Length: 186
Image 1: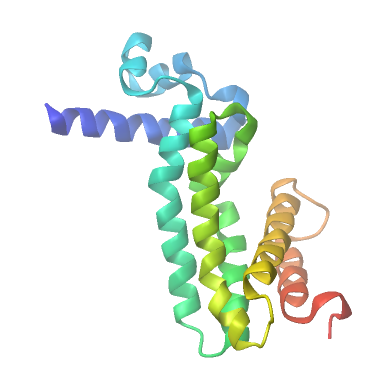
Image 2 (image 1 turned 45 degrees about the vertical axis):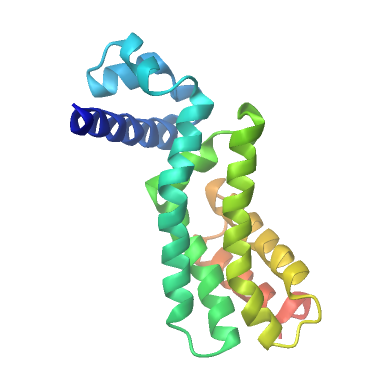
């Protein structure tokens, strides 16, 4: 019985990823989840109390995977600059991943305070990954700089998500240049 519930929960999360990825926040409804999984609508409520709870679970399941991918990319770099570049590039590479598109599709304002706090904590863990490399570069306030760096990444993510006129690879190059060289670009 527990295995069946685990499989059903996973199917619901997969359906939620697809719905959010395909149609954004408006597409994530309990009737749509029920239809995608073959469950009765009332059964969906046995697993999740709200759309926010679905997104909170997606973050809890998917964010550690993304973070591990970013961390692995950074571990493959030998220099602080290489780690910073890997940090930026890997996050931007993940923009096309269905798991990423699903989570960013829903507005944090639709989540309860507990869910928003969990998401903030997860992002804080991501930012913490780059603090050491920034310190190794001689940044006097590496934590603050890491937060600004994540702001550059977040802006690039939004630009890619919006389907901006620039090619995603050009956006990634600009973000890496900003991360490594600031507004001077040199």
